[in-house]
Length: 380
Figure 1 (cartoon, helix red, strand yellow):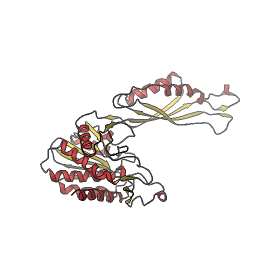
Figure 2 (cartoon, rainbow, N blue to C red):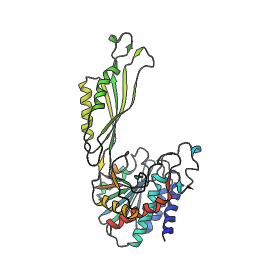
Figure 3 (cartoon, rainbow, N blue to C red):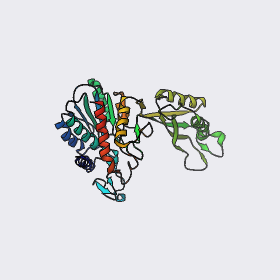
Figure 4 (cartoon, one colour):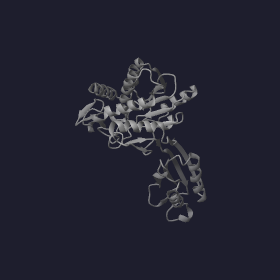
């Protein structure tokens, strides 16, 4: 039976990888999921928004509701001639499954679906409800995907209790790390204005580079917040600086600085913006500053869901998992607005977004088993 299960999960992963769903395309991935979930009793709803395809599927009407979330879209392949095999033709080499989406995150979706199938067939009278929230807009702008579905669910009054996002969170071995939160991201485009002039006559010009440096030095040195049990201190980093007319004898009229905050729940968007403006104003700069909020932070403290996942990981792999909030943003930031417990867990992430993306085949069955054991713990 075990070999059957492994081949079923692996076969579904390969089937999904073979569909070239480069963001925001879904290429029929979600139709295939609907074919598999409907016979299990799921009510499946396709939610189209622009070019993005979303799926909301639910089985059951009672609480608690445990939702599996993920995305069928993948990042572009990059130069195909650099791949050892066609990125959309699942291939096996040295115990690894290769293909775009193998790690991020079509194998997770396959493991979730097969885990739910096993669980529901073995436990037809299980408590609570199970849901799937799948989008094709996670790798793109993320404006027509999970956020749209969450808004609909909130408007309907649907209460999510637990959510497992299948992002590749493991580091070296399956289960060595799960994400119980993510930092927020907020970018700023700062333009400091001066007066252009001849470099030999600085008294007739106003050098914005010179004016900006003291303020930037203070921003670099600023301690934005303290670390806590879950997060590193908030980080402020400059990513680009451009000033100059292209000639060595011209004082520029302005300097443009791009910067980014990666911030924890210890800070807010409003407090960080206010403090930046206060420093710039203190230096009496003539400036404009445009803000872009990429995502607010979220945090799920240790609790029922993290304990259930940790227990399942320990039972399946023998590993004591680590809670972490490192890494970039994910759709968990949207789901956390309507769900009190959101945890991300999936395979190792060493090859994601790279040429020759892959997952070790030995991780595929245990991944499915961990999802199933978590269901058994939360929905007995």
